[in-house]
Length: 429
Image (cartoon, rainbow, N blue to C red; front, side, top):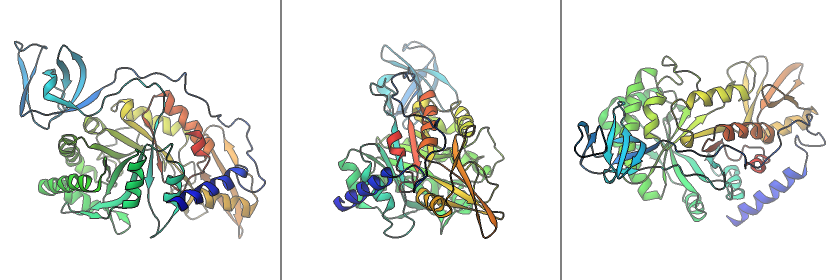
């Protein structure tokens, strides 16, 4: 670990001693967003809080008195939203929209938003390896433990029967726990190298398989010392919308009763899009009460198989956040930060990490440009007579996006993925 830290520090010194784009090139726009303190950012107000019923049965009443009428009976494990506290009572609402009062001792809050004294935002880093022994993510993590608050290693996947497959990276977990960094076990529906619609649909539609998945996740968290789970189910068929909601409801009921975090990676969208094969299964309004953190994947606005364009333009990201905030209170919402870019030719595109992008800049001696509207860098070059177009994210586009985090008082950011980033983004954080 000490060797990894030293390697990272040396790498950072090399990176930061060069100019932004490598070699002798320099930033072309003096109007790049400056890094500022956040003393004037909006302060936290009283925000919604989630809780789980901890007693076998409790009455939800019309008024905060035992003489008032009963609206409904809540059973142990039910997830509710706390809207107000008064004289030993909570005013709550359930997943069906029913509202009423319950005694405080019957509910166990899962997250309380408290006024911030430092305005520090949380930073979640996704940890993944491209090949066995890939050191990049570990080096990035080791060099930035003073800024990272959560780390989410891509180590586990679910099969159609609800079994959890994968293996813990003990060195990473122990290092994070020693630094007080929360570790979230990422569970995906990846089969071979792709997210599997068949696997996730089969599991979600079978109540026994859902139950097995949840019990296996609970066991995994307990045995390996995780703080909770990060669910990354992608490509869920839109027809499975109610089953995905049921999964999150059942998962929260179990994990919250053990004080574990329930988080999820959410597809970016600007409308309900119930028809969408990418985002339609995610009913933001229905699942928001069950999540402690919703990590919105605010990237891949343009992607390898589509036309060239920004990975995450400022306007698009803000529109995604505005839609998300209709259903998620800001203290639950985490904005995704892309640490990569794409290069397109006249046929297809390809993902590139920041060092690979710098290499292209140096190899073809190009000067990157800054798009004032999109708030992202880009450039073009010609290879064998074919024009190539590159759009990517760096420290300046990240600084611009941090203005949105402060503007909407979000909980923080999540980086996909550690080891791919422009090292300068850590100065921004």
